Length: 91
Image (cartoon, rainbow, N blue to C red; front, side, top):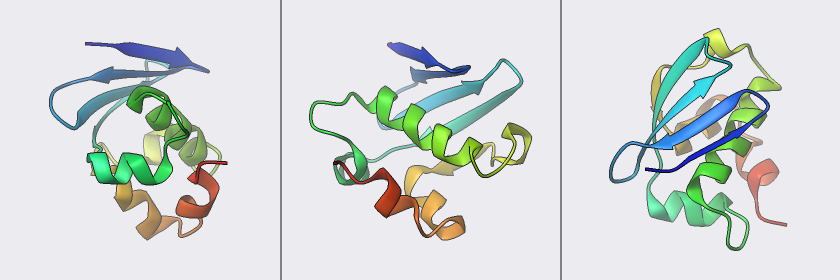
């Protein structure tokens, strides 16, 4: 299992396409990130954990950690924030 931490967001692989994300030790989230979704939003060579950290940075700019769903698929973010795909697109 790998973990990546930045700005209080820790991402740990938790099985096939599944990750556990902890925010500042206050909240824990289970995120499913299918390979095809990761390819859509990951920068070249970016590990999934880093992509998920960026996704949580995106969410935390818009809502407090306590408001983020406890379990969701990465693509679900776009249902609540349509700008997700554009903001997360590799540059």
